Image (cartoon, rainbow, N blue to C red; front, top):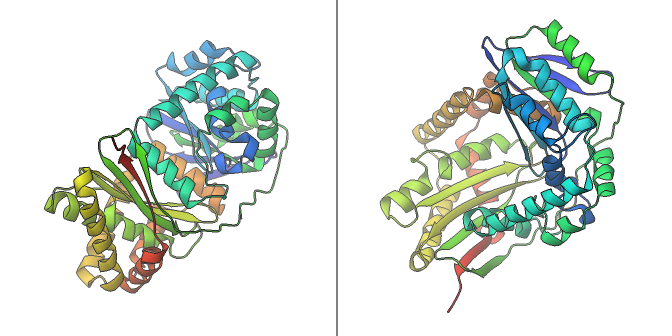
Length: 410
């Protein structure tokens, strides 16, 4: 086991991954995202992420932003459907400074009205910029179509109407309901001893009041396939095809990850890239993605191409899916797919902040951290028969939804 765990009395867990380096990384991961918003709160999780950098009980915006930048550290944050994460990279002697800032902005922000108004305008600009980027916008809109009526089915940014309506009391209500101490993991990697981290973490986070809540995410999903084409002021056709998929606890999760990587994952040698870009030169970008969530998941294929080539691209995509449904992978094909995926995972270990955040997610999702050896073992256990069965379930033609952005007609 290459990590150590500290359980604070209030339920916050602190994970330490010791590494000999002058550079350290830390994150605070909160098991709360856009799917935890009530209808009148759409956009709230992401809005709060922005507001955490504004003002606390003892720091103004400039003091927050300068606290780490003045020592050359990097501070950032992001929001997903299920998580909010703050992370920092810094020289190891600045650990106290980082953790103290985490504690201050997450638990002592005051959310002044004037800052809320400014950040609403910032996020409205962010929404507008997404609309100017169809390859980004279609990913969000596709989830909206796929998860229509489900908690996962609205944009993380919210809408202009929902964002404008949010008020200060809404912020505090959301925090009380969702920023629960038993749903927070602080993860650190660096050249530190367990005793030092225990002492620092206890002094900074140990006295925070207990706020616990049992997170339950089992929203009913009434999935219905759709085929939609929406006119946009764009020059190319952008298309996403996909289906609901396995949740994060499903035994087929690893198999679908291997299959996704083979079909349209990282690198230039994926089947979709070789067939549609390299062989026929139809699409500059074509890729597939699989995102598991607590109680469901999403598999999707995206490509953008000229309008006259879009139909042929869609036909070629369906041809590759049919091939995977009907032809079991040979032994060599399967081993190559596994080796490629394992190699990418291993190289990902070099991204220490990414690994650290993954470890924190493991702790929230499974109450343990999966080692690289365990992940590789799961990948190697995937069989050609399992891949075939997954392809027939997830790529079933009658279960696929398709969304296209097409150029406006003159």
